[in-house]
Length: 365
Image 1: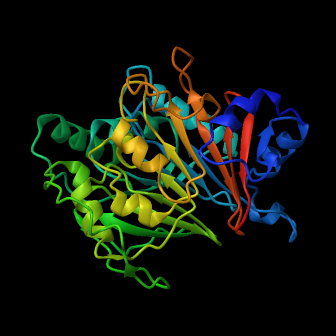
Image 2: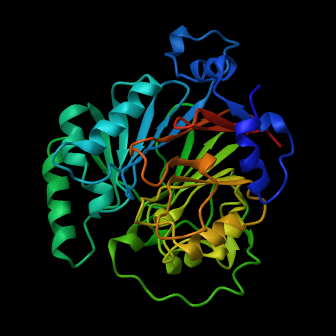
């Protein structure tokens, strides 16, 4: 197994690699893992076949688009990126769909009605069959651009199935448990099967200002596959993070944390990041959007975090970037590379960076 090319990365990690085998260049062995991870129709699976949840953090240049594909092949897409004349973000979503072996989206969740989260939807619906559209309800932001984007959203989904979700609702995907944590400024007080516990990180948290934008209305979800847990809170801002997590944490811990709000300082408070105690995090930042030093440092230093992955080098953040091995799109390099997660029900998972043909394994605990 080739490891020399990653010796610099190993040296830069905050803590030593527990096992050198965690670094997996995409040789024939690793490619076999990737092939095995593709979802297959239930009728085509043997009873002993290993099953995986696939998660793609798609590069939409500092917006959000996250594709989840269950072992059954059922899918959830969270947000659609920006509107572009050439359909760039829709094509990048389709590329991830192709890698996952799917041709339709079963559920499309729009976290909120900002340009970089809903703007790509009108183009996507022209290209891809979509079963159901989910959102938090009417636009709440008093701005012309958000009103325009919300109107374009309504026009694009006219006549199609739409469901307004509320905290505590679920999204039905066979094999997964998906619960809505936040929506339209409200949040859950508890989750079935999880006992809220006092959050020790609340006491030191400042009182954050009220945010009247659509960010504070973001729909956030918790995805559970067996023992594996993934959280995506859209662009939820700090006052709402505090309301969700304090004085008691209703969520528990997670394995994978999608950095909220692209790694901007208006989000990612210690009261939520440290309490969630993720093993790995993915920051869906752009070259010049997100990846702010304060948020990056909070996530990077959170207790138990092994790796912070980024979609782009944050070109304005100086030295506060992850090692190049963990970045999908480097400064001055080509855009469009996603990060791929392959998770198993025992809680283990692998994060794959197609740019450098590297996979990092996180064994079950």
